[in-house]
Image (tube, rainbow, N blue to C red; front, side):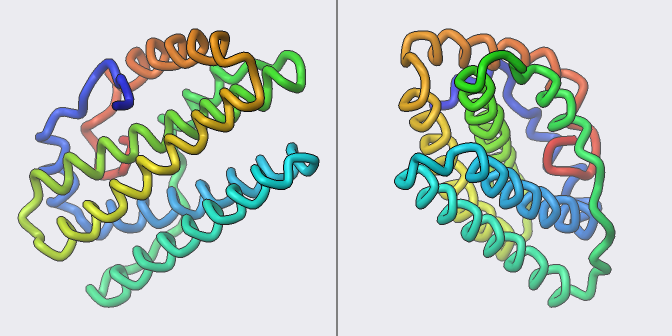
Length: 192
């Protein structure tokens, strides 16, 4: 569905499960950053009321996910730590075109779609490979949500830009992401 070029090695789930408290904290902050990103996109598109409405729903859903992860952290007696630097996302951000307003907005939508796609794929890996039944169920639900967000962001990009150009640019994003993700998958973080 996402056409990701390089799948996550299932052994990453073992790394994650060995320090689930760290993964949960990192995940919570990823959800907060996703909500912030959706709000940032709203500020760029005030004239598109339907898109703003959908972005508001995404921001609210991401904050709800943040809350759900935070509740799991508290319930399990883990310490909720400070926000983590997300090197993967920072590397992706370098690929955003700083050209025309349209190019920038389309690329920010593709940037968001890419993060959602990889997050969904990582949640699938967790669902299929960890032993913790509660978290398996939780990550399966989030996997579906992330897939919907991916579809929404790709749809916005095609709505706001020339669909053929957007498809070509998405292919470029997929290639770029494949080169980045080779360096990740060995840390206790959602994208690490």
